Length: 115
Image (cartoon, rainbow, N blue to C red; front, side, top):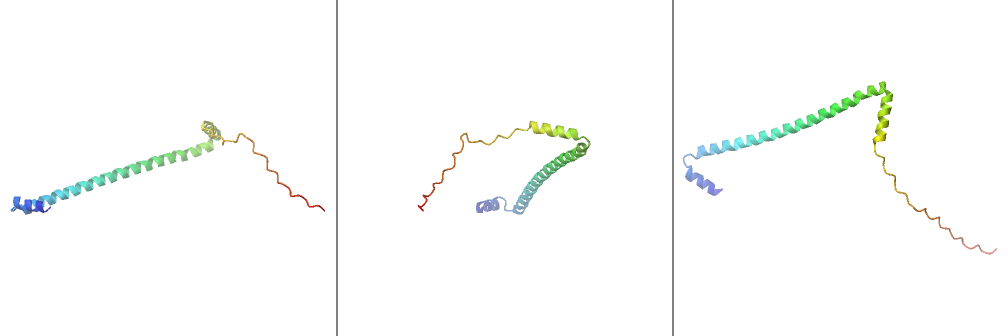
């Protein structure tokens, strides 16, 4: 850093204020460009969020629109539910032990005292 200052004084002794201004302009342009880039990314993220929200809203509206149809045509609703139930995979049954459980152990009786 010190070497750069000494080199700047030697090379740009008379023009040092102009060189400083030029460096300041370059730094300001760099900062502005970087801020514009960040703003662009934020806008794209906001657009993606808005697009996803609109898609979710459209799906909700489709579902809501199906409710009156269901009340008008209950046979169709039953048919759709039956088809959905038949097309869904059947969950596997839990494994049952192949052997029967052992009978409960007999509780030994204590000998009765003679009367």
